Image (cartoon, rainbow over all chains, first blue to last red; front, side, top):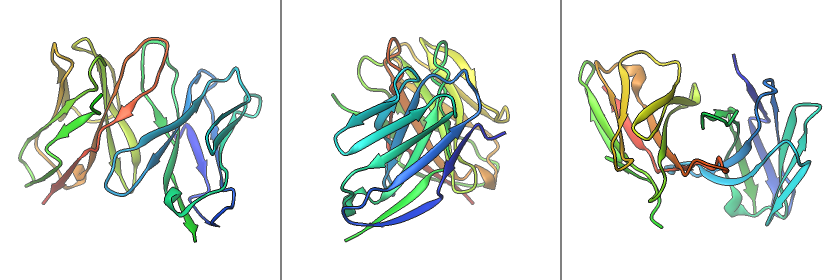
Length: 113
Length: 113
């Protein structure tokens, strides 16, 4: 049973555009929602994360929007650059006695110059 | 601080053999988790260790095992390798405490022929 659904599967934007990647979760026990960026041949790198007690978090050009009632969260990349071209994964964790992350299926982002 | 290191980076094995992968967490981090990444199944949780104890285990057969040493370094072992075990095996470390942040290593690319 997939507990974190991610969309779209792939996304192409022009330089300067604002790609938006969406995730939805089912388990209301999740209390930590990170986003990871992965380049080919590399491990995932933690970008930004949010807890359910806030509706938005911004770090640099990356913003997470969180809708607890809808059980959805999304990543926005402002002023996207070709160097942002990568695969992005959302994830969720129940925290507490475990760090286990449940990942979405990933979004392949291409930012065209 | 140095990041998470994984050895070896690449490995080719034959069906039926066994393999051991190693992970050294970020200095001071006491929790280590392992994930398998494949194009078909995405990122899946294998197991998690804290203070030499397995805290959580994913839905993988008993051929997959792991352990953690007193210096927090971790190893995972896969016995009787199958073609389907070909994957990128990722290790993530975290401090454990108020933050759930996990940092991934570059992974070990295992190819089973």
